[in-house]
Length: 89
Image 1 (cartoon, rainbow, N blue to C red):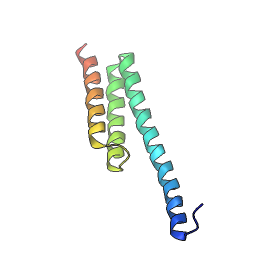
Image 2 (cartoon, rainbow, N blue to C red; image 1 turned 120 degrees about the horizontal axis):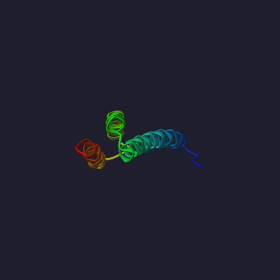
Image 3 (spheres, one colour; image 1 turned 180 degrees about the vertical axis):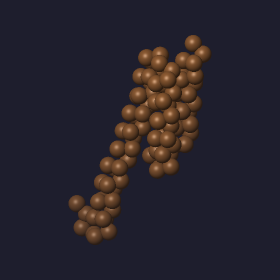
Image 4 (cartoon, rainbow, N blue to C red; image 1 turned 30 degrees about the horizontal axis):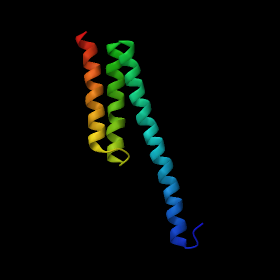
């Protein structure tokens, strides 16, 4: 355990930040799962709605520094392609 006041404060900040980032990551994974489940069901309306709901959540993770921009861009691109594939079928 840290003895210096500033080190103790950094520990408290790290704990808060870790919990916040974990919650954000969890919301991102949940949004991705909902989109993938909607795509797997073959319901294009549900897939489109899930994608529109999940896209801001992924973008928010980028602005908050939880995920890198290219990672989210790649995931959104692949999810969008899978949603569009339903429309073509």
